Structure formats: C-alpha cells, structure tokens
Amino acid sequence: MPDYQNFVAAVEENGQPRKAFAALEELTREIVGVKLFTIMTSDTRERISERVYSNMPNAYPVSGTKPYNETHWSDITLKQKRTFVANTIDDIAQVFDDHELIKSLGCESVINVPIILDGAVIGTINCLHEEGFYTEDRVRAADALKLPGAVCMLLHDKIREAGRS
Image (cartoon, rainbow, N blue to C red):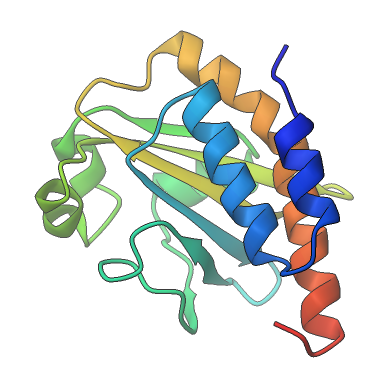
C-alpha cells in the first residue's frame, strides 16, 4: 500500500494547490515512475481541458484551455473512464500532435489516469517516461493515484472559486 503521509501533510500546508500538486507528482514518482508529469482538468460538457500543473513548465506551461483531443484517447480516458497507455512514440503520435516535443524530452511512453468524481472525469494525471516504461504492473499501481488526484482537483477548484489561484 502506498505511503500517503507526505501527500496528506502537503495538503494541510498553505500555498495551495501547488503544494498538493507537487506532492502528487512525488507520490506518482514513487508509485509508478515519471519524467514528465502534468495534471489537466477535463470539462466533458464543454469538451475542453486546462493544464493546471507541470513539472516541466518551459516545455509544458500551465496556461489556458484547449479543446479535447478527439481520438481513441478521449474514448478510452474520458468516455470509458479507463487509464490510457501508449508505450511507443509511434503510439503516442497517433493521439498527440506534440509527439516530437514529447520525444525531445526523452519520453516515449505515457499513461493518462482519469480523475473521476460523481461519475464524471474531471481531470487526468499525465505521466510520461522512456519507451515501454508503463508495464501492466505500473498501470495497475497507478490506480492508487486516483484518490489523491481527486483531492488535488477539489482543492484546485476550491482555491479557484475563492479567487486565490
């Protein structure tokens, strides 16, 4: 079972939601491993998403909204509410237009873990690493990130509504 103590401690601190997101990144590193880590919101009604955290802000800045990626990625992640896995850059290129940037960062595999609340996907935890990295065991282990991910998204929404983000 994962050790959530550092995550819980981070959520209790001031400086939110950034500290919670950073603690989720560290938890992700421990549970499944990650080079590039981002968190995106998902608005399934409006069909838009927004990057709200990135561990590589120069390459993947936190900024604005963008329309959904309407590929088999959205079918798996947003409609079926399952973790999307691509373990080669060719598989990534089928669903993400920024595959060349991804490869330039030393990443050739990805998992996108849906964050689900009240029956809806409200965001995704996006983990990228070297080719073939996300084995079946790592993908199963990533389920342990869903609850901390939901906590982060709720905290993000609360801070945003309060006008503090």
